[in-house]
Length: 364
Image 1 (cartoon, one colour):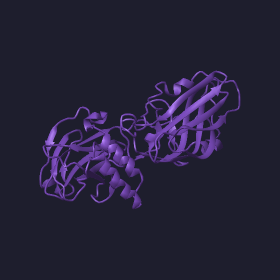
Image 2 (spheres, rainbow, N blue to C red):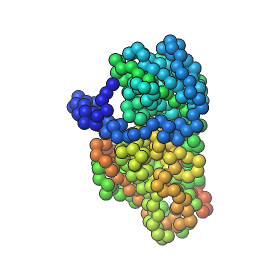
Image 3 (cartoon, rainbow, N blue to C red):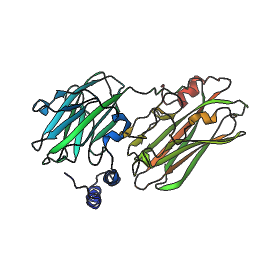
């Protein structure tokens, strides 16, 4: 089991970085060492159904023992090198959150979990330290198929023993569809790096639409941006026009200040699979927990902007649209490739097929 003392963790992490390991690990270890929380602090783990105990040796190999999502599963790594397997069912598109935490008088302290597909061989995803302390947490993983899944849990160290508990929950996938078919769009190609640890940030733009005096009914923004620690990032959309200036935070350091460094997930958008920000029955991006890679899809603007995109409604369409981006902690970087603004006018204007193909990252 790795030591929890921050100085020792950081010293070890620096050695890892020197050996070509990811520099993210330094920030990760800092985050784990200072976050005094448990799985039950997360909204995904409210209303747990029942306590159940492992069955040895049934859970020693795949397929393991059946597990009902929502139950608290109490288990032990014993003897050293023990693996515990459970199986459960999920539907395609379900969001799976699977985590371990300390349990018993002598907890194991450090776990790794692996989610396998129905063949007991293919690893779909895994996690080491995203949970409380040095425990594991897979957050909001979209189930790729309808059927049976297998989870294997073990200690980080092959010599460690001790107790832990596991909880898995499932949530129906949010409605990630952004309505763009009747929206007029314009795109700004940026290709700029975001200065590291520079709260003053950069302004990107402007995007302008041909002036016609029409009134905004709705706005959807999309963003092609990569970054290796989304909790560092603020992204703000601003419209400056005849009706004044309105701004909305699309991202505002997801997970911060609930954790010291915010969510560690990577932004991984490409030109054909972007991050959209709209209104409706959508999820916010990584505010309570986030996966190692943030899936490109459509999200609500940051909770720091509770009015969301509705703040733009009723103002004249004419004017300029700017994107402000800042990085607010050291050690991780990103690039803004481009962003687009899509506007629904008071009089709906259909997007021409040629520009629609260029401006929409994908149908959603």
